Amino acid sequence: MSLKGAIDLRGVTKRYGEERVVDDISLAIRPGEFFTFLGPSGSGKTTTLMMIAGFAGVDGGSIAVDGADVSALEPQRRGFGMVFQNYAIFPHLNVFENVAFPLRARHRPEPTIRERVTWALDLVQLGSFADRFARQLSGGQQQRVAIARAIVFEPHIVLMDEPLGALDKNLRYDMQVEIKEIQRRLGMTVVYVTHDQEEAMNMSDRIAIMNRGRIAQVGVPSEVYERPANAFVGRFLGEANILDGGVEAIEGDTAILRIAGLALRAKVRDTAKVGQRASLFVRPERVAIGDATGNRVEGRVRRVSFLGNIVRYQVEIASSTHVVVDVQNSRRQAYAVDDPIVLGWLVEDSLVLVD
Amino acid sequence: MTRTTSIWRDPGILIVPAIAFLVLGFAVPLVLFFVETLREIGSFADIVDEAVTTISSRAVVNAMFTTNWIALLVTLLTLFAGYPIAYVLANSDRLRFTLILFCIIVPYFTSVIVRTYSWMVLLGRNGIINQLLLGSGLVDHPIALLYNKLGIVIGMTYVLLPYMILTLYAAMKAIDPSFLRAAHALGASRTYAFLHVYLPLSAHGVLSGCLIVFILAIGFFITPALMGGPSDVMIAMLIERSVEIMLDWPSAAIMSLLLLAVTLVLYAVYYRVTDVRRMMGA
Image (cartoon, rainbow over all chains, first blue to last red; front, top):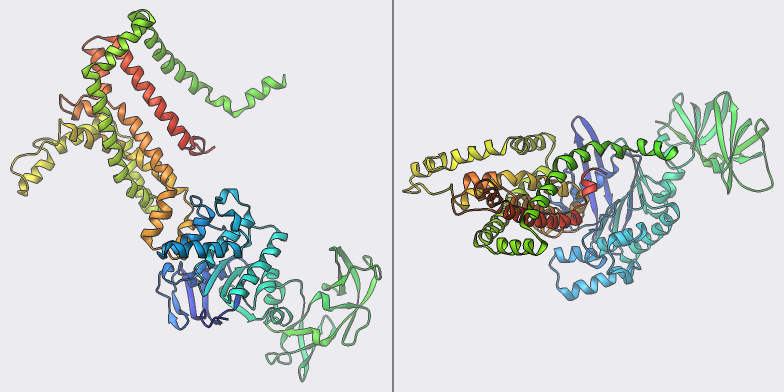
């Protein structure tokens, strides 16, 4: 892996009038890392990327690349590759010339251009499309051209702004695999922006989940999914049971929560205190039907959703308190609405969240 | 039954009054004029004879040369003056956009005669420009800015500039700003991005603007008649002279047909390069 391509954000802030769109973000992106900013629209993820790219000015803090402050540099002097959501393939140039653009802008000699463009097009499997124009290409092919164009000059850092947003689901998955593979082979740093949590988890080394201009959590995909820092992260990364209650007792790393009259156990981080309002977090796929060592609750099935490979039950365990359970679709168990049901989950699979 | 009602429900029916007005008020009289005048000349052979004589006459050849030369100059000048203005217009915030557009549109809606006379006040021997030049000591004698080709070109450039600006603006506004972003992100300097992305993407606007200005310029009458000199005769002035002074309607008809034919051919090209339907909002 290359040693270049580190990005340091220190207290980066962007204001639009009174509103802080990006509020005091600090993080270090490592060389060769696939780093994703994930968040809902308006969370500041795209603005953060635009500040890294240089299209949006920094109102506070600084951005450094490999130790050098680039906050005041124009985008064309930062030397990043960039892929846009709408591809931005130049319509007046063919595929070859589109990919050659960054090299021509850098006044590279013709033989180098020919060689690099051929290399980049082969890498995205578009070698035979050099003479085509954007309007003759499918969305997926246009996105490959955009990727080839972003890597042809071998930048240490490539920025990607929701590059797969316009593609349909199956193609999106294939492209995720392909982008990840290219990133790994070239050892480049990729800073990726998306609102799709599956995409983020599939590709990223680390994810920063953003909410209202701030970073809610940074971590490897399994960590942010299994151990969310708060209810927002828990909900944003897929289905989550978040049951509101209060902390009754803490025994080591386990807390007893009082939720709708039930005493439930969950793993606790040092932030929780006895008597505090808190929620119990558990993923639906970690809840099992039938007895389990750990937490055990009884309830009635209120809704059954058939989702293909899984069946999702919504179970009322107390008035206005529901637990969602995902079970693999099999012929074994089948519950109907209003059936009584027993649920259980391991204490290690649940977590106390304090907001 | 359903057929008749569907025709009446088609919104296309709404343009029928306008088309009818144009046909009755413009196309029919024009055709009648040509038919009547050409019939006066005689047989088809006579008409061809007359046409060859008229078109190859010195006056007409000179006028065609002058017309094309002036139209070309005016087209290039409006392009070079209009491109930067259109660029600023296309890349302005609301306030600046409104202000610039106001400055372009208001003269556009003012009578050509009024604007032409205003220029004559500025450009005359004792006009403001000559007074400034004399006063500052830059020249000893007033320079001839009026009643020559220079006067025509200045006047026509001014009158036709809005057409160029608005055509270029429409083309520039259609350029997705993400192309320029992509160019900058991928390492292009401002100049490189302009020359290799913006300019090529606005090229069809340049072509449309040049064609529309050229088409309008070759038929110009008032401005060259008022601001030109006795030897600067454009084709439209020659037609007017044939009708009003020489009372030579046949050659006027032949010259008009020539002008009409050239205009229609250029318009056909314009139609091909410009998506007229898209400009109309279809």
